Image (cartoon, rainbow, N blue to C red; front, top):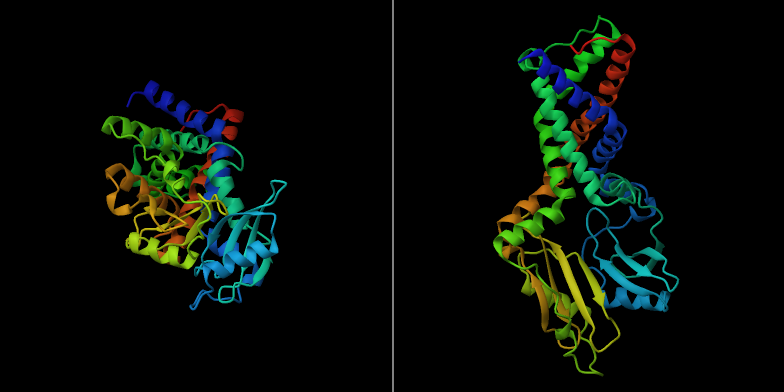
Length: 361
């Protein structure tokens, strides 16, 4: 490769890292930690660790009745069933002043245990996915930036096989960090490509999926509120447990884990049940049933997912490593720290080289 081309690639590689280095460090470090989101949420709430998600569980009607009695002025937004990750019922409610609260309830009795004190895992996930308050496409764009850094880095360091085993521990600090930068980049190359591609896809998914639907000439699924109006005024709603059984029958390929109450307490009340596909692959399904008679209003069945939906479904499991148990999570954690280390070593090398005015090596 010509020297001018190498210098141009180095400039792109260096300035990409310098301009976005701090942001990439925050995203990559929080991404490494967030693979333990569920474990962190439970660890941060030691009062919930004594409970078990083993059946028999309290009925959904008991849980909702408890919430309504405890917070009569609040709106119940959703109820999550106990899981191994969080062994209690949890519910998000909205107070009249707009405050949103997460409550925990006893898995077997439905008794109110109180507010969930900490959402440490969710906080770190929000930091990683949204930078706390930003739109997700910003993090998706950083995935593209990471890909640019990977490609230019590979083209600059053409002696990849040599870099696999080169680490000069007794040399100067600059050479040690330079070798470490290359060593980490080469050994974790495939993982970095995986994280960059899936991160870019997840962040830019709305644009990608809209384009895919346009090319396929298929409009996005729409909710039909008119079907809800068919509920007769004054009809008593079916029990939530009956609706849950009907929803599970309607979606046998889905493990229902949560429900959302829609227009509850009105003639048009309905309940949306949702959960992950039992076959994995990152797909989710949901079905909305009219509370008055249990008739189906809307269904999204993973078995009917098209090619792009299945591809999109795999992106999150591949990005967060939550499909292979605790061992895979630890592997993702340690490998997930390597892009953050590259950001630190790359920035230090750039600053050091500017001070000495040396050429890239």
